[in-house]
Length: 413
Image (cartoon, rainbow, N blue to C red):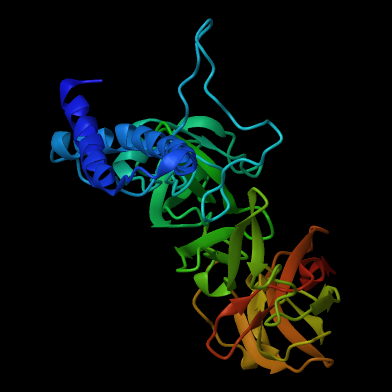
């Protein structure tokens, strides 16, 4: 015990003795014995109190004397991971293994309270970045392009068999909270271009990776005209049933919007038509032809003959105008139903040297044309003539059944 603590205890006993001695009165043996018993009990109590004072008072005094300004109050408790204990070092005291783990207020295990999931990689890729290195492309339609796998995209689709970057857009198509890049790539084959809409992303290391193909030509559509990424993460693609080339008129194209979403690790169509179906603008014409029978040559050696052509419109569409082609190969016009003909300029692959009135669906009609032919006799060969559907704007249309739109005409004496 220190000197300071000794002085505190002595002061307590002195105060007690000064208060007790004046009250003591001698009163004979019995009283003395009673007094001794009382004093013994008091002495025991005083001794106990002194012991308590000897411990409590000096400690309180020491605490009061030694108190210095301390650190601020600690903040809310934080969960930390324990340091690993090396071999031979004492193990920290832990609760029994059967006790449940400490949980955060949200019920997550200790150490994960407030933890945020890692941010998704930024998949916004520029045109220059896509052109800078090789990218992996899904397979094309076999008759369009063979350049799948890791390829370097070109700036334009001028070279046959070389994939090129046509355009790109951005949006969150896989619902990970970050944008991806959706690109239209093309691969020229002849006069046409195979096309794909492909989504690209980045991995956690920042490398460009292929997320998947949205749509391509050769899968019920022959062209991709446009695409867009919607605010909801869908990709809308405008597809066409033909790709006009090789003098095919653009008005023949039918197009429709189809919607795709990223589901189950791939893009799946979720909206729009799934097929084009029959073209409701077309009908089925059938042509039959007789023989061109030539008469006796005149003084100049020319022979006349007539030919009857019959057309049936099997429907389902009315035909505003009919156009006959290759009649001029049979000879010069010499009358008959040539008086009904008028000429039209060639439109794409369609041309006619005689355009006449139309034919409603389900009806049949015959035309007889007269020719003037040079030569003493026929050569026994055949000339193919054809009938086609023209609308009121003089545009030619293909037929639902092309093979029966033509017939061979044989010239006989």
